[in-house]
Length: 461
Image (cartoon, rainbow, N blue to C red; front, top):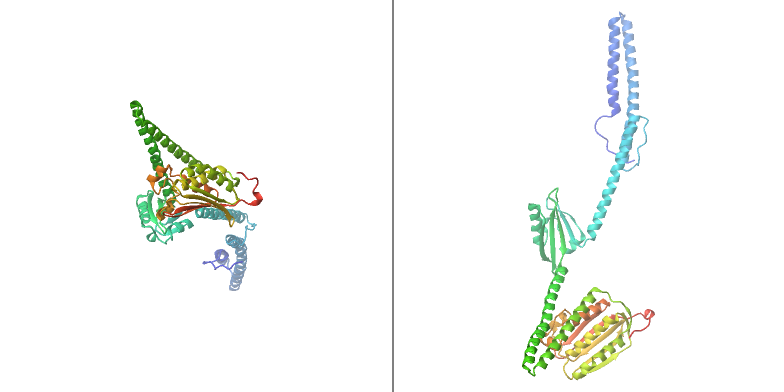
């Protein structure tokens, strides 16, 4: 049993002894006085009566002490067991022979059991809340009425860099203003700010509690969301512009063609050819947009695929275009197998080869090399074209990005080919990069996981 400090005041048994003892002595004294006053006795008899009264008083006090002790004992036992119960040294209170004390013990046991259950529930709820808040990607900071930080989850530490002990140390500063304004207005306040290295775009919402002046600050990293929204806006603007260009050419050429036909002018053939070129460019652009939309929406269906045969097939498909420009095509294709979507990989290979031929001048060369290196399939498409400036290398895979917009349109490019290539390669667990030197050509390198020989299955050309 654990040691406990002695309580102040006198015990219940002592109080009973004093109260009943004094009452008993008073009773004995009154009886003795009445006897002496009502009966004539001799001095010797008076002394005997006094001795008898004193003896009866002593005996009575002993009896009163025993009765007081026996009466207080169950209460003391109940008190001791109750202390053991509250300190966790006992689970239940023992039953008492005194009915009232037994009922009191049962009531105390039920009260303690209910309290223990509520404590367990509160601990469980606290643990659950800690797990939920700890798993959230949003930073959560709770400020007390005195502007002290009561709680901050791990995400708040990551987003803010460090969570201070008080509001005055919170960074970025606009979030401090949000908390103070929220406390003054008792309304949610939203703020956005840039913070950290590298710089991230953070948005915070300060929300007041309805019962007191505590403030909950929730911080969200919206850097990627803002970037996606910007990309979406740029994509819509660029797509509209790219679609408008051939459509405008078709409309203008159609009007000119009608005039030439009416006048029976020989230039009508040229206008008809211009309409055809613009229509084909529009068809390619729409086709690329549909391919890109499908690739972003669907996951590729993988199957064993002979990449060397597929690249050779795409090279032969584009050979007439290369021969028309007197471009030499070369292939060094080692037999390799990957797990991939034949349709998607073919589109990627075709776009890389078409891009190389499109930007290589007459008399140049385009080569395709394929081999396996350290468990990876490495495809290199090289050309001796005009090359890409160093400042543009990081952006060539962006949608509608062109190094030379005027020349790209004149060659029939849509600005989506390399974006499609990047999406196809990454959806197959690979990477694509480019090396280029202005005036000396470019090399696009695609790396894909090699197909495990145990699961190769039949090759598909």
